[in-house]
Length: 288
Image (cartoon, rainbow, N blue to C red; front, side, top):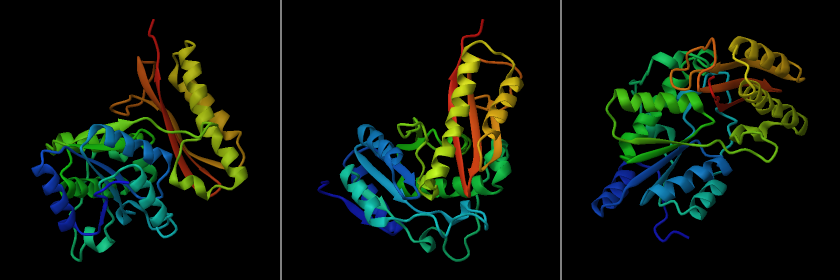
């Protein structure tokens, strides 16, 4: 139990807690989340706890990153369970603002990082990243963190947040933590709870396809488009799945690749039943 565990809903309350921590010379770490916390989030909170004196978790289902047809209304919001996890993980402060606190009437400023924000996820979810970078920049200004912790599962997102910090001269250090997986390999996600038992089995094909790419490339295949075609064919065999993209890219620029480079990222996005899932792995190869 954290002696000073606090839950606040207003920006002024957050600032007052942060100011007090900073006055005591404490470093501040923030873990921005949309709630529905699982073991993946817990690993971020634990890393923040290791690296920071004062840990803030933000829980906010951000409306500006959802398209009209997406799952904003039904996105899980298990508030009590989330707060218990934060208590258990020795979080110092939880910021749970209502939408009007983050987006008061008349709000109109948006952060568009450009560049890679129009690729992959950006292509399939227009304006999604604009919503993400806007809310993250706001949260950084509100919490003034020395470090912020994100998961590798949202690979493109963490690249964009790093780019935003660089371009806008933010001093917050972005720390990317490894994707956490269920024992069978499925990447942990708050949306996994939408999956039926059968769909959950079908969803394993995303990680299996990424593993296939990794093995193929590490066994010496150098033709990237050949590997991508094989990945698509493999994934298409799964019933009840609709593929958005399957690709292998440069790990920093997300540029398409013709041939192997020492480090690459394989990414996949697909809808299983009605649930859209994403996953990725970093692939390292020895170039002869």
